Length: 88
Image (cartoon, rainbow, N blue to C red; front, side, top):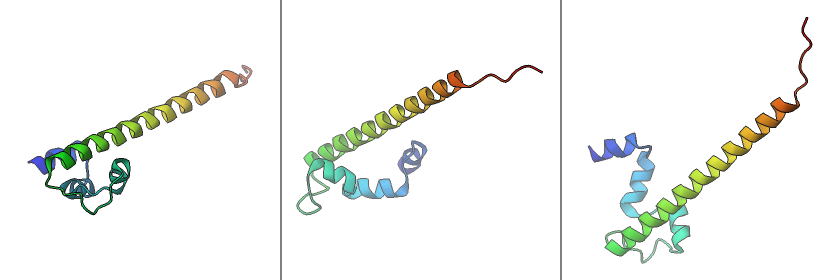
């Protein structure tokens, strides 16, 4: 049930595998840790990993929203500058 709930929220099997071992390379880069000496069973490591992952996801969302807004602005400018077609 937990796995199904995670999938329903948008995670995939790879995300779950990384979460199990705290091994996602992007998250680990944010933490500044290598895969050595970062025990996945230590509470402090799990907390740090989850916080770094949350920050990464927030940054991705922010970037996506900014790109979406830029596309909307470009579309609005394009529509404003369009030459109207004369009525027949």
